[in-house]
Amino acid sequence: MIFQELNGRQCKTYLLACESIRQAILIDPLREYIDRYIAFLAYQGLKLDAVIDTHTHADHATASFELRRLLHADLIMHQRAPVPRVDRYVNDGDVITIGDLTLQVLYTPGHTPDSISLYTGDRVFTGDVLLIGGTGRADFAGGDAGEEYDAITQKLFTLPEETLVFPGHDYRGNTQSTIGEEQRTNPRVAGRSRAQYIELMNSIDFPLPDKIQEVLQPNQTAIEDDRAAFPGLAELNQVRQLSAKDVHAQLQGHESPMLLDVREPEEWSGELGHIPGSILIALKELGGRVDELEAYRDRPVVAVCRAGVRSTTAAAILTGMGFQRVSNLKGGMLDWNEAKLPTER
Image (cartoon, rainbow, N blue to C red):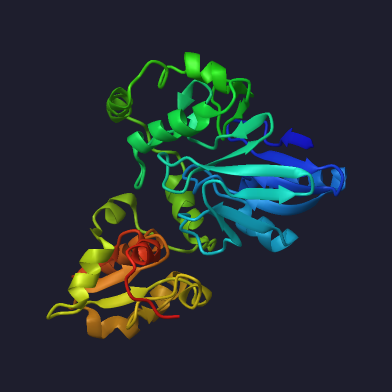
């Protein structure tokens, strides 16, 4: 196996490649280093087979969309990932294979709902869930300190103690640790109960990442147009969230809401299907097609997408345009399907 960390900075990007077939995987690439990654691949004589984002990043722009386009590599993310341009969605226990290189997917939520770790042989890539001497923040939308504690203690800490730990970030100049060392010495987790961990994480006042407004929503939506005017965090936090069962009940009521699906056309007719009677306007087209929704300006509107993330953005945009009664389908079509509610394809 060929292995290299490519960034040499606090945000880590890892390359793994099969020597026999000369094909590679990139884990958590940064958009600002695309030229570096392409040059390294060319110098080593490697073909990029797949790009894996361990979660939807809030602190740097992903390179995955552009590498997918330029090098025809597959993008792999967890089933709960909100973005549309994913070629393979994975779940806990799935295996990613390239030649003689095998990665086992471990679902490790808590930092984000779509966080995964990747285990191969003697090492594990933990994304932002388990860091060296720390853990990932759990205060973003969809984060959950209890889930994070469970992921670390019940998934990662069950790996062999000698397993090398390679995190998505390090702020102290470390390059690797081991599962055993983190079990014994990680100050956030070692010796703490689940309740104590939750209390600790809730007591920490984490600063927002410097570029969160510039990178989080583009990473969530795969809209890379720098002219796109995304709503602010305060506007997103004000969007009313409705469960799948709540929306279904409203559809049976006397004032049925208009359902606005903001996914891409291929998603609308894809495996998750769409809710009967919904209207499709992709998020990237919403600003230019809002006139089509004038008849619903004073009526209830529920925005819908894959995981409830892009649709939260859409709901905030519509609210900012004067629509008075906009809500969001929490968990999107993933939760709608899990609830076994009606769909069309």
